[in-house]
Length: 111
Image (cartoon, rainbow, N blue to C red; front, side, top):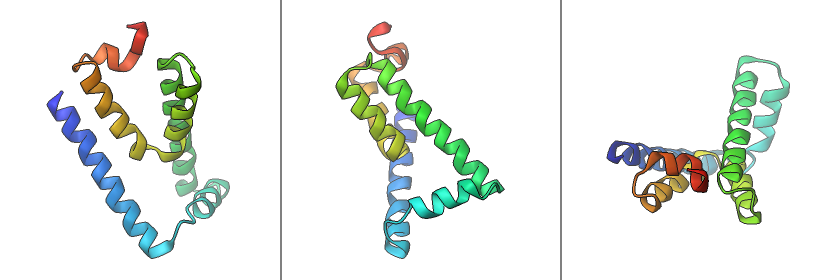
């Protein structure tokens, strides 16, 4: 579990750093290049579309894990928009709340 937590922390710090640099160089307009890539039907567009599917799946998993409560729907939407910037801290908190029991991290109350 320690290595997993280190990975999550590294991912969060990496994306926070990358995002800061991109913002400083290009501003907040991330949707125009993202969606123009998707509609271009090129390899970068394919990657963007695939990534969007992963983001939606992570958001749906969070909603399902928390039994589609209003709070979980909000968390799922946040995960779908913010990606690993949201998911890494979310998973980090879960690993501590569940005392590292991976089945409880993945399944929530269903475990």
